[in-house]
Length: 108
Length: 114
Image (cartoon, each protein chain N blue to C red):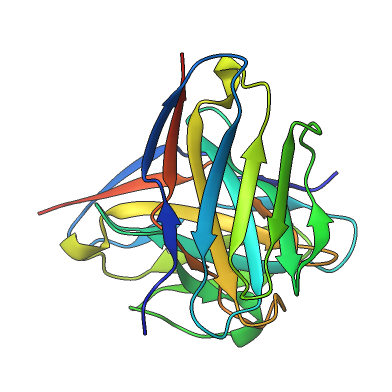
């Protein structure tokens, strides 16, 4: 069955420290993976997607098929990175599966 | 370009009633997806419409239904409301629904069932 797991509900890091938000998935085929972000009082929005292999706002994510992971990383956290982060998977069709989210707080 | 809009923003209903939520996608977008967001389950996919046809459906009971109009606006209906249906209902639109397209989310409709 398709599943996206984000093991950390809450994550706090100091400004300037590296940050890693974990995401593991379960899917029998070749999934497309995404990270979405929701800043305070804003809408959920796409942060980055695996197929684009892009870096957005200093964040990167590498798909590790062996470990079925798609962790989100940033070398130096900024206060404006504080937000709710969701990992998502798209399988057959356009059906998306979201993780339960990780709330990131960057401490000044 | 105006974003995805959802109406109403807040709703209070009682058990057994039915409710209709509306979603207007970004102009030119033909795919609309609906999600239910709850604290315990997170975001769960309800269904996706493209060109007035339901293409995908999540694992929800038949009380949850939807439709899409020729102008791509979509409605979602929940009949015989249960307490557990209390949630934030999000819709998202994209150009064609391809994974290469970006999904744009609306602000959500907060449904409370008493």
